[in-house]
Length: 297
Image 1: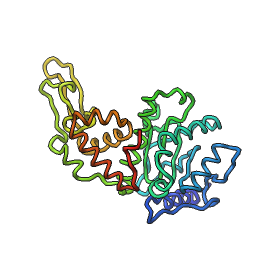
Image 2: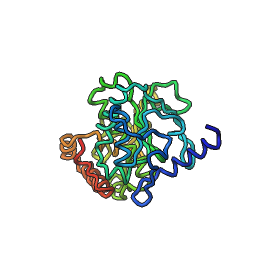
Image 3: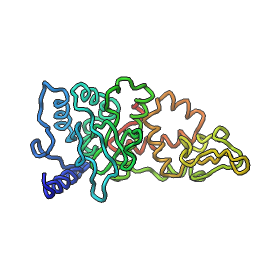
Image 4: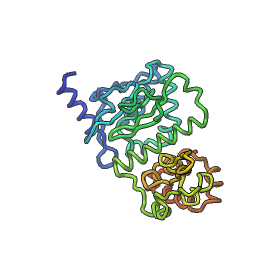
């Protein structure tokens, strides 16, 4: 593909990346560079065809740079490593993606709110950090959500690992795509008002994370990026910080998908501010296509 054709192809897929009901635009079969034809004898190709035919969403199982690097305003600073192109692994990967993400949402929701592409990946690496152990389970951008972890050995994932991947994929879909990119999902101001007085608060007078109950303030967790211990005998000690608004949003959207109804009931019985923020987000999510998070476990 020459440079001009490559650029035009990138622009085409971005123009097809509408997500809301008013401006949904999807290519007809045969108009895309993806193979969307049906092959009932191949479970991978059959599912790709069925998903596109029913929802207009393209599942990409062999991504290359044109699928993920570019958006309207800047390049995505990532490299996506494609899964090994073995039929058994891809079939397993599709079943996994359905369990943790795709089948959580009905087809009408996918039609109205999903990005144009869902990308399956072995790994998602940030440029300049490719030599590090992959630790990112998902990435959401202008026209796609990428799901990592589709690799040999995935059948050995523990329930805890599955829950972690599920919560990160769905959390980024709602926080980074529906809210930040599309502006379809809106965090209500009343959500922030619950913990307003504590945003960014820190402790450095001998308190440890065990001494401070962040749930009492309506937070899912501490800001661990800014919480640390220094063993200097004179100036050292704990620096403990709770989240600001951005991290609070991210942590809550992850929590919405990695907690069970039983776990939430037990937590909310002890922490009324946690229950209050959950109910606010649950109602806000219902306003987005009628999605009911309380039915997801």
